[in-house]
Length: 190
Image (tube, rainbow, N blue to C red; front, side, top):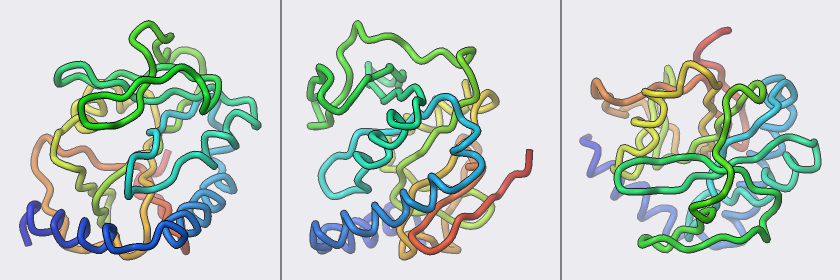
């Protein structure tokens, strides 16, 4: 199956999911993530602000801040994605052209030198050996090609998003791990 067909199939499934189920599954995935050594060892967490019918990250953001971890979320400018620190979900945010909340332009930029960083990535579908299919903009692949060697990457997924047929291209970046509501997989060892 090609990327476009997989995106269509998965997006149809998630669009038909009740919000209460989506929230419950997101919470279960999140609870599994925070039990992992990669979470406990991280000083900084990079993750996305939830948008529409996708994985709900509010629990993870609150937990990271409670655990005294620095939290940074993405901001899009042209074809570039940068991560900026936030202190909470009620920080000053703006909505970009896609309707996604993001930090204001002047927010402090993520600094990899401030400690071990864990990036929790979104995706439409995920596969064995860390393959990830995004929405098609290439923002995460470009970011990881530049910064991927200074952080650990874990995909946030529901079990039904895990598939064996994720096509990978040269520019696609593999993840270090994946969490679903029922398992935590490690693809790359330290």
